[in-house]
Length: 105
Image (cartoon, rainbow, N blue to C red; front, top):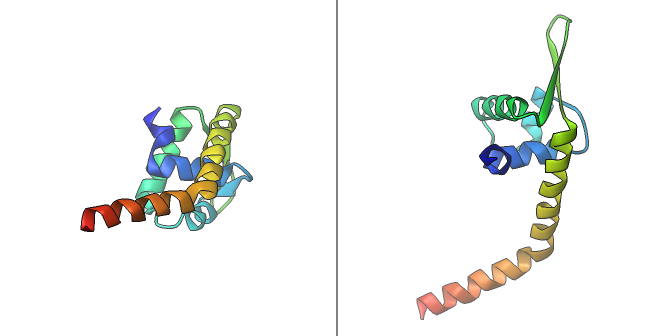
């Protein structure tokens, strides 16, 4: 399950939670991910049964990514983690500041 908890895996699951996306839009939504890492992450999550890849037979090729039911369950847990982070970011920053102050003294 390291793929679900990887840096890019978590962000892909979160990005696909609310909508089906084409590759380019998904890449723009996940700031900092390279084409190579996004491609590898999508392939891995597809292999694990978390992401569905649908190819439409048109020119140029049209590919969409969405979550499978299994992926939706994982994304719901990821969303809970994101919510916790949003709720407690100031607490973590304050703890880091206290720690840093003790280390400098």
